[in-house]
Structures are given as structure tokens and as C-alpha cells.
Length: 558
Image (cartoon, rainbow, N blue to C red; front, side):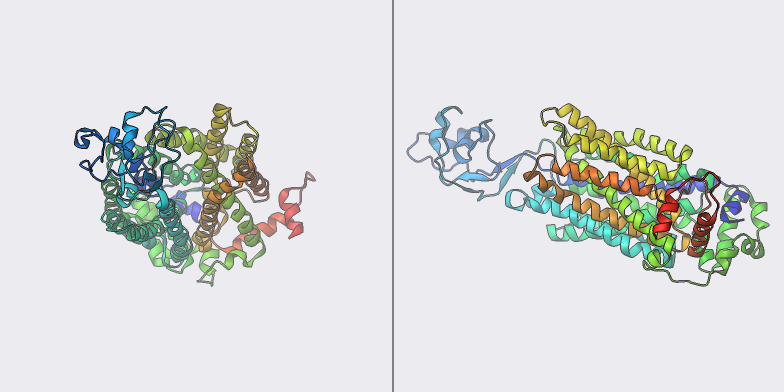
């Protein structure tokens, strides 16, 4: 008997699971906005050097400058390209009034002296009224600061994965979830009032930490309160909410074109999430592992009452609880760290494999994401396309995980998109439709791979180090997402080389995934000792068919 049997006894998948999962999923939808909001808040509109003054003297030319419109007057101050578009970062050192009398084909500006914009920039505000780019002039020589702000946010996510995941294993899932909601609400709201770009980046870092802590905690709470047979469906809630969040953000951003207002709209709701999080029960699994049996019993009775099984809940006593959770109650070690992920043979093998899976999935996903931004259509439409692609891909993922298993599904969702990306590297640049189609399918399958690896990781690690393992995996994902942009520079040496790299790593990771154990319909482990004993027993189990399995091969090597 184990905790899964206890859950079935108090209602299995009941009212509590539906309410708690719904509350958590709603917060996940809003949380997505913080991760990808810079698609809108940091959008770069068309811009050119600002014309200093309409009444500027025209020298010996008989021109009334105050009577000219901005577009006409711009020709005398800013060089234009062959498509008659003004330069974004240069202006003439002296006004060239003679250009006003020449058409585009006659105007030769190659020998005229230019300089960087002296008086700031004028922005096209038809699509966005205000972004961080237009407010702090993050263009031309400062254009790299736009990417830096998103890198800072991802750095916060990485820090949250390392720090808050370990604290969740030490202090409990609910405490870190509640703390993270409040932290995200405060930091996100304060971001909307940032007086400078530096403070904006600092607050984005804090928000990234909070988002990471909240996401890892609520995924654990969902999994640890869900019976085995429903774990696949509810375990993908976080991933599906991310997809829905992409569509929701596109709609919100379409209606709100000012970045400060948008920031407020996606941050204030977390104050509500903070108060709602107090309703969610702490993980009874975690409480039992940490010798808090009375608190665990209280939470179990509460869940039973909400599920309409109050009599069954009242019948569960401390003695009954100890009978169900004998190994966990007898476990003596209380403090676990990242070192425990590598201390024992099977935990070490699992962690090394998952490190590669997480990094490869994120590396390939964000590598393709940069290419998909070249659709050349409205940013709002592109965001909808990104979100819509995820639904069929993740439905396919859930189907495979339910009927085939986690291991083969993970391998398929890495090898197939990897091969698609590799094939894309050899498609001529002129065949844009084919290149885009391959990239879209690859991105969708790698997004589904994220769904699988989150659930797979949760099921592979025991309760005592589950959050630590999730945090470590998320850290490797951030390493992949930060490395992906640098690989794009390889295109200077060979066309298609970045795509070869983006495709090769997922294929390698897909092969490695085959060597992990299957977890479909298997109870969640609670202790490292249980995992080691279970894997050792599987290794000693006679193979009546005489098959050489990946586990046998890798076990013999380790």
C-alpha cells in the first residue's frame, strides 16, 4: 500500500483536485504573460532621428519650413534608402534643402556627411503607444539593452529554480507558492512604475525568480495530490495553461498598447492568487516525509471532506497513515540537497539523463522560436499562431503518454523535431513556405516535449528531492535557452549551421531518453531508498524473453 491507495480511499479525483487544479491553472495562464510579455512591452516600432525645429532657417533657399509636413521636411534632415525609408540611426550633419526638390531616383546622398541622431528619435506609435524601447530610447547603439532585459528575466528564472526549489523541499510547497505569488504581485506592480531602465531590469529579475518558484511549487502540488491514473491529464495542466496564456496575452496586448498599463493588468491579479493560495492544502506526502504526521492527517481529512468522503477521512488515524506510508515514516534523513541527486547510482544516472533532456528541449525550442519571429506579419497574429500550434502538439503528447508511456513519448518528441530541424538546414533559403512549415512543426513538437519532460521528471524523482530535481532540470533548461541565441552567430561561417546544431542535440537527447525507466501507471516514489531498491529489483528480475533492454545495457556500464 502507498499514498496513491490512500488517495483512492478519500475520493481519488474529486472536488478538491478540480478546484485546486483550476485555481493553479488560472495563475499559470497569467504567469505566462510575464515570461513572453516583452514581445509587446519591448516591441520596436519604426523610428528615425527627430527633426529639431520646424522653424529652422533654410539658408539661401526660398522655403517656408513651417508650411512643410514632417514627412517632406524629413528628406532634408535624414538620409533615405532605396525604398524611400528614412534611416533609423543617422541624420545629416547639415540640412540638405536641395533634396526637397529632387525625387528619389535623382537624390544621391552617398557623398553627404552623416552623424548619429543628436536630438533623439521620433517613433511610429500607430501599433504601440508606448514601449520600454520608445520610453528609454533602446535603439541604435542601445538596441542590445532590449535583449538584455529579457536575459535578466531569464536569469531570475534560473536563480529561482536553484534557490526556491530547494526551499520548497525544506519548508513546503504551499509556503513557497504563497510567497512566490506575493513576490510576483509586488515586483510586477512596481515594475509598471519603474522610473529608469536599471530599476526595470532589477524588478524583472525578481519577478523571474518568483515566477519560477510558483511554477515549480504548483506543479508539485498538483502531482502529489493526484491519483496515478489521472496523473497524465492533470500533470500537463501547467503546460496547457502556458499555451492558453499565449493566446490570452495576445488578446490583452491587442487591447492595451501601453506597456505600463499592460504590466499592471498582468500583475495585480496575483494579489488575488496570493489570497486564494491559502485555500490549497499542503502536500501530505511532503509532511509525512518531514515527520509532520498530525498535520498530514489533518490535510488528508480536509481533502476527504471536500471530496464528499468525510466518513472515510475520519476513519483514517495515525496508525492507518503509518501503515500506508511505512517506508516514508521510517525514513531518518531530513535535509536533502543537490548532492543527493548524484549520491546514489540510479539517482545519478537519472539526473545525468534528465540534464541533457531539459537542456536539449529548451535549446532547440528557443532556437526555433527566434526563426519563427520572421513571419513578417502582425506581432499579435504571430503570438496567436505560437499558442495555437501548441494545442494539437500537446494533445498528441498526452495521447502518447497515456497509451505508450513516458519514455518512448519523450524520445519521439525529441528525435522527430530534431530530424525536422536538421532537414530544414538543407532546404534552400528561397523555399520559404517549406522552411516555415518544418520550423512550425518542429517548434510544436519541442513544446510538447516540455510537457512530457516536466511530468516525467516529477515521476522519476522521489518526494524528498522532487523539487530539488525539478529546480535542477529547470536550471539546465535556462542554460539551453541562454545558449541558443549565441549559436545563431555560427551562420556567419556556414548557412544552415545553427539549424544543424539546433537539430543535432534533440536527436542525441532523444536516444538518451530511451535509457530512462518507464513511469506510466507507477506510484510516485517518496524516498531515495525506495527508488534504489526498486531499480535494483528490476535489474535482478529475470528476462524470460532474453531481451537486452536499454536499462540492462546502461546498468552494466555504470
